[in-house]
Length: 140
Length: 285
Image (cartoon, chains in turn orange, blue):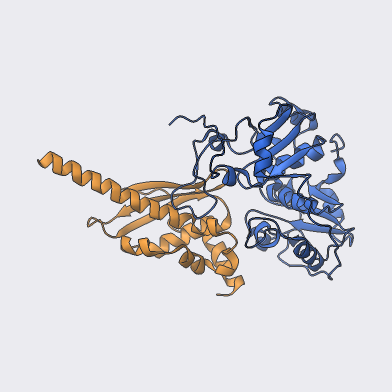
């Protein structure tokens, strides 16, 4: 993907965001970003019944072209993937996916959605641990 | 605009429209959103990016004199060129670029009042064509970090003095300590939330109107004077990395004519992480 193709790719996702909006049912809604800077992304996450795979992810947000396009692209990348694969996703992988030449000077914008998704997964796991402990205690 | 202390540093969109082909004028777009220029810019405008062009790529600092000369020469900017900055977000990054140019003493640097938003709102032309200018020869002095730039230890001494002022231009949530960055945020995070002791809170964007142009001089005087930021004081402004505070620096220096205003570009990303530096936190969770 050359520079112009990368720009067109990002603009397409920015102008026609995929998986945009709230999600119902949802397991975790995780806000991310820096309001002072203006880039805000909220990730809505639904995990499958087995608790090990992304069932659906949507996002809402405001901000620069790269931050919002990256969120849209990420939701397509992770649909149906195991949570452990998201754990292994590196911020550099995300930058390469978006077009390093175009986004390398804005790594924070490019990786905001990924960081927020990782935080959502952490929250999901914490919630699940608490729910399991509560269930155990009720059973006992 | 004549009401301001230094009206010569502001031009309006009509002035820019009349000078698109003026060889003595270089229009420069500087944005937060790095892809806006590619989506369309003022005809003949070049792009200068604060990360790629103005920052040192290794040390947290600005480009050195040699690279500043190379940058401006390559962009066809000479020492006598009138440089007019404009950009997104109420000219936030445009004033940041102007501030860096002033560190090197560029004589004639101006801001297009209202920025990119006003140019578009008025229906002026945009183009995707990237212009090419013949290289110039730019000679810069060594960067002057003493007049309009403040460093951490200077701020530490500053807050012990009387008759000085410190202004925090971040959002109220950042000032109070309610917000820091989210987990796994890749950069610019801070370990502590809050503000530098003695700082007054005046969010930077309060200096502009809804159409992105600057408020009147009277309104600006009331805004800053009402919080104790007055021209008789040695003033330091800060934000998170020094970009929003460059906007306030511009307002205080050029629109209100304050004689001594410095921008602390280390700002909260340095102070909020600094070992042993005092902070105040008003937010109670």
